[in-house]
Structures are given as C-alpha cells and as structure tokens.
Length: 112
View (cartoon, rainbow, N blue to C red):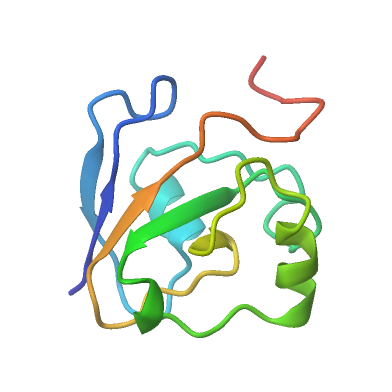
C-alpha cells in the first residue's frame, strides 16, 4: 500500500506525518481519514483552491489534472509545477511526498 508523507506544516501537522493510503483514494480523503485536517471549503467538489498541495515526490505517478482543476490551480496561492488540488489528486501505486502550503485564498474558514 502506498505511503503519503506529509511534510511539517505549522498548524495542520507540525511534526509532519506518514500515512498509508489505498490506491484510488484522493490525497484529501486519505489525509482527513488520518486526522490531517486539510481545508476543503467546497466539500471536495473541485470548486475552490483551499485543498491545494504541492506533490514533492511521486507527482508523475498520478493521473494528470483535468481542465477544471488546472483552471482553479491558476488561482491558488503559491502555485508550483507540481501543484494539485488534493480533492482531485488520486493516489496511484507510488509513494507520495506532499507539502501543504502555508496559506490558502480562503476568506472564511470554519476552523477560525
């Protein structure tokens, strides 16, 4: 079973985390199932950018982003070539190393 390594994030997972994920599950769902509270203001419907992550390793193992995800990513804070919306990034057979950006463009958070 592939592992997802989440790099340390000051608020969401200060120590970082290593979790196992079934192939076919999204990065967001795997994180949430393991207590890593990635923001997902649109309830994972690919309508915002709050679940934006950067896949530092294993990026090429995932299916490519579709046009809607690409359009939304253009609006994400800190966009990089390996950026994905975690609600759309499906785990394949390879391990992933994921960084959760420090900021999102979410103006309202249910956690604050």
